[in-house]
Image (cartoon, rainbow, N blue to C red; front, side):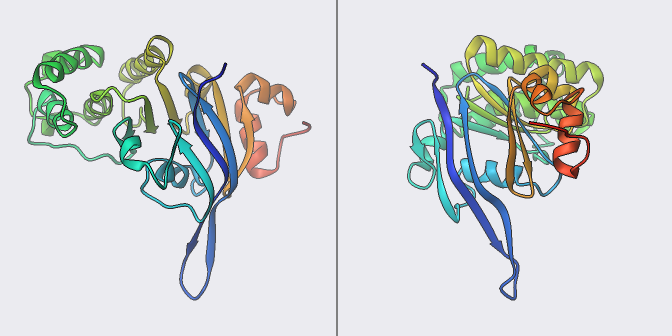
Length: 254
């Protein structure tokens, strides 16, 4: 039996932009995401991806419809949800005056993780992202890619059941991006953690994602495995599917 960890029904979010002008950020979005999936959220800027994530972690209240995370209503049980999910935003802040290790330990300490357990987790994650030799250096001297590795490790220190990652390999060099992708694969396949991934790198999507959902102007226009969508829309690859759905060009059938 499939274990659904995220479910939305007709989820809608409308923003008021002054003088009674309304912007529909999400329009009756219904979706299910299963435990252990790497699920890609695709769409152009303004499509509704960030709005959807913010609702699922309790930063926004839906205008209409419903959403459940780990079986809990996001409007009623958000404290329970927040203890079990983690978010890596695209523009995540980092403590420049702390070392790589201190960044992880400080963040994990906010969740009440015991010190011994916390340092053991930090050891494993620093090894995993390739920063063990730099663990005692202040991150203010790190490159953008190295800082991103710290942020990925920080998002994982609480061992969340669900990880939301917005452009996780942004600013990371080719080797670093490969490290991050391997971490995400391992989390999904070995630990059955669910990863919600937004990215503009369609090669990354094809490599990592079990399924994808494509959003355009607040509407969920397609959901499925990349190979299934290519077949459904008679497209040569996922890029052709994506471009066809968001521009109206290049998609020939369903």
